Each structure stands twice: as C-alpha cells, then as structure tokens.
Length: 117
Image: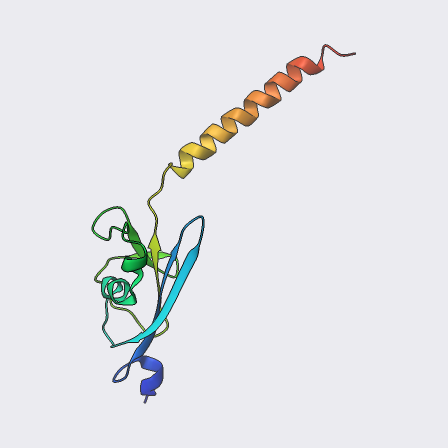
C-alpha cells in the first residue's frame, strides 16, 4: 500500500509556479489540495498580481517541467507549473536567417581572399 504523503491523496500537495522574464524570474511554492489544476495553481499563487499582463486565455501557454499542458491538467505532488511567454520570432526562421547571414559572410570572404596574394 502506498504512503499517502508520497501520492498526495488525502493531504495537501506541494506545487510551484514559475515565470521568467529577461529581467527577472519568479518561482512561487505553496501547498494545495489534491486535484488542483494548472490554471488554478497559477491563479492561487498570486503571480497574476505581480504580472497582470499574463494572459492565460490567449498568448501565455502553461507547461509542467517543460512539457505543454492544458490549463485543466490536474497536478501531482512536486509539479512545477511554468508560464511561457509568447514567442516574438519563429525559432526556425531565426535559424534560417542566421544561416543565410553566415553563408553570405563566407562567400564574401572567399571572394576577397583571392585578391590578396
């Protein structure tokens, strides 16, 4: 038989809510009842008062330990809910642009390299 303190059944569970910005990061820990959802944890943590621009219905997505979850995802003891900022650029497009710039620099270096001999 499993120990109730490790399963989170019957007693409170420990959860964290995390949000990172370029200028600071916030990690809030608290106890909650079993069955609390990711959205409820964010709302209960008080982080929305610190960052009123967080939009759980739109731009901001939620995850648990780096994996996207739906807001109604029930949490387990020890889970960390992460609030993700919206992307300002498509990562694939940024890599393409970097590769294009690098290729352009290499091509011009090859052309200029043959003039000095």
